[in-house]
Length: 111
Image (cartoon, rainbow, N blue to C red; front, side, top):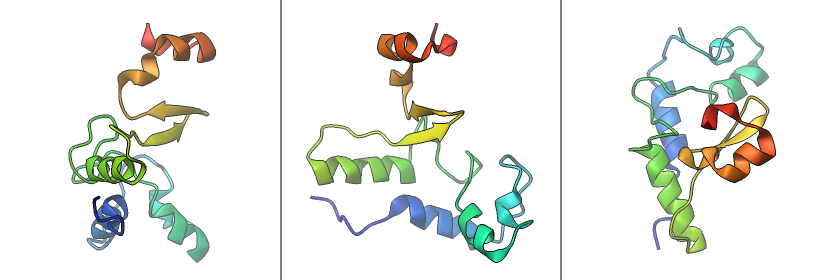
């Protein structure tokens, strides 16, 4: 079993935060800089696919490691992280374009 105390995704985000980045990308809240301290502490973790971070749709680093830890913890062959976007769940691979998804959500992007 893998080291279940590891937090690869959080570690990568904290590493990014330690570089004091200037946010010039989406999301528009600029990592919370325009809000009070409570929101700053939360919004600094709301990042998009930016240079140096991993990509949910093609994980190669921290997200891949987090998915491997999840699989190991539950004895699964494979685990995928989900993201809540545009009021619907998205899987981290192309399974979000399955027939069931098209039927249930009418997702035209999967045509």
